[in-house]
Length: 542
Image (cartoon, rainbow, N blue to C red; front, side):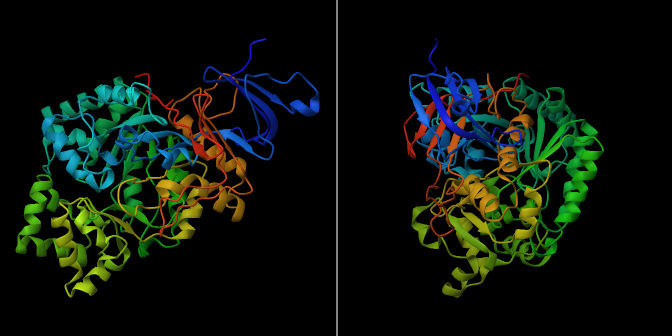
């Protein structure tokens, strides 16, 4: 008899398919599930044998959760513990989101990207960036720490904004024919080297400067490689439905699969309008569009303070933006766009400074601003809200992160029920007071929205967070509890699982998730991180 490495006995298996749960023993060997024996004890049949057994009485065994929208691009190289995600049961993260990440780059764009996303990931000066291509970045992730690997598995999206930065810089104009050819080549190279698709951040410069035709051309390349397009579209506020229509039309024209990033409807303009969006999505699906989406189970959003600026103010890159902010006349134009017109960076809605809470700063001397809204800071200083925000942008060199309290619970619940839904944290790990979604998204789904509110059944929810997500990524051996599948697994107590993270204390770990396996090895045991580094990149076969 060949002994398994581990046998999980008497688990209630929720297998990721959406089908009914069942009681079973599950055996794991060499990183794969080798046996699933249903009702093993009751049937009196031969139970799987292993060098170690784990009594799962009272626990649910499910596939490891897939974070379809992650910002751990540098964290996976700087934090071997990475309990922010492992403690939630996450075993796979999708990086390269919102059109801005660290590959492909050259010497010029590396410095620009680091500054542009310092609010998301920190300055990045503690990472020796030796890579330039997507393949080299993925190789670096695979080496992880001391050649052992990283905490969880990772997939990567080619970031369209970074690609545009390489080809055209930060200019707000259509690309030349040669520049568009270079963008196509960069996207194709990234997909050949293992990226699973392409992301866009269409409210973030320079990616926001791309028009529909340019995006169609790049999505045609993505389609050739069997990848998917993942846009943060142009508006979640005024014009949100038109922004969704645009990316659906782009995908249709290009023949490309589409995955809508952190799909929601925010701001007062969209309260109670989820039905209109759901009808739009259903129409596209019924018409043959290969469409999925992800959401996080919270109402506030999170981004950088600089992201609210109008797109024209960011032309030329971060240093040019800072120069405009220093000039009083130009700064007043920016203020008018923000407070009166509604800037494209703020989704076409005039900013309400009382909804904008500072969540993190790059400069430690500015730490006393964290946890307060821009309006509160202005009231305390005797200056206008705009001058307060302007001063913070300059002092922190655009690195400030914010929470934006503009969402609606009814929209959140309606979207998470949708047949194309998956889960994504959109979790920013950097900053003194980050959004709790970075530490609580997946247990919050299971505890609040399954057990307490009944918005989803347990089987439905697990399928959204596992099997459906793995299918979008094109993975044929992950996302289900099946013999032969990779043993990325989570065990949780359905009666107690809950997020610990709150807006007041966002880094509090969850409860009710005692075991997490990555590639068949216990990365979390009895609720504690073991130090196992079994994560590797999950690459397309492009």
